[in-house]
Amino acid sequence: MVPIAIFMCLTQTSFAAARYGSSDPQYLWFMFSALAAIPSGLLLLARDRHPEAVFWGSCAIVIVFPFDPMLTLMAMASLLARRSSRRITIGAIVAGGMTALIAHLRDALNPPDASLWHLFFAKPNTGGNSGTPIVMLVGETPIIITAAVAALISTAIAALVGLHLRSKAIAASAEAKADAAASQAHTLQADLNNQQLADAIAAEAHDTLAHSLSLLALNASALQAESDKLRTMTQSGEDSIRTHADSIAQQARQIRRQAAGALDEAHTIIDMLRHPEQAYVQLAPSDDTALTRESLDSLITDARQAGMRIDTWIDIQQLSEMDENLGKIAYRTIQEGLTNARRHAPDAPVALQVDARPQTGVHIHISNPMAQHASSSSDRAGAGLQGIAARIHNASGSCAYGADERGVFHIDARLPWTRTIAGEQTDVAGLA
Image (cartoon, rainbow, N blue to C red):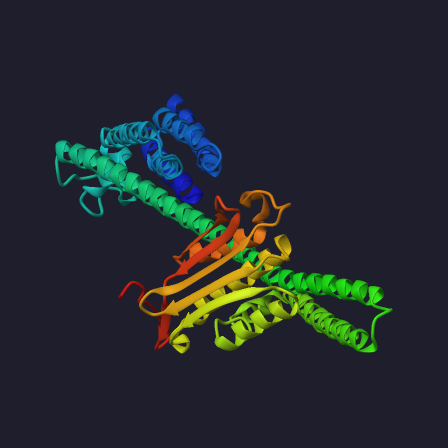
């Protein structure tokens, strides 16, 4: 851009100076103009930082000196490309068009020997270095009209170039912002996934460790009670002592088994924390955490062996068709209900009802009298029940818990029946 602007300024100046001799005082002005053409073209180098100043300065230079308007049109395109203000756009196009019109008409109004426009309409091999006077093929009016039209067309072209460059810059900026937004969204999604994984690990830790540790505590209390009985029976017969000793040994074996299980569960949680990329696999439903007859029998048997009194009503059908994720939520709900009862009312009987069938979905109800020292339901329902309720709600189910006016604590959970058919989950709840 700089060499082209300098060349056009020098060309226009050389043509305008052709009508003056070297002894003419005005010839010195054109010599100075020729010298000023070089720094004038270099003005374009500042168009990035100061596009307004470069444009208005080029307008003034082209009007003052006998320069071609190419310098102004380049500065105008640069200004339009860098500024999106409507006022600046209109002002630059009007000022650039007027400057181009003045420069072209100034050249067209010069004598034929000192005009670039006249050279375009001159008869070939006339004027200049040919040694013959210049012969015009048209009159002055067509030359002036052509110069004016060329000024307007060149202004329009420069404006379109500037607006096109601006649109490309805006598109590139929008694309960069979109990429940045996408990157930020990806980062936020990754953070959300990490947070969800952490929440899932925390829920798994609570479900497994709290259950095992509560069994340990209950068995330890039973073992202590048996030890106290044995101490008071030292004067009794040998058979009674042997019976209580066997009971203590059984309780000790239960504690050892449950302690080993709790240790394994702790190792599993630690492995998930150390290898989060494998945590989703470990958190997936398994045979031990699915709602099956075997898992329920094992869960209830462990609780009864720890001393809990549990009355059950279990009616489950077509479990093989139940979605495994739904089964795990149901299993965890029962497990948390029994754990909650052991922790807050260890000596109270527990009523457990489980109904699961495709027509009605899954219904779980657990109730137990509250202990004398238990506070309100909001105080005794800790993070475990809240976490279970959140998982049930996320599965489009409902969960309510609390104590009634008789002091009985209830947990009532309902889940819609979902099954996996050809790899797809289908909600068939409510088809009774």
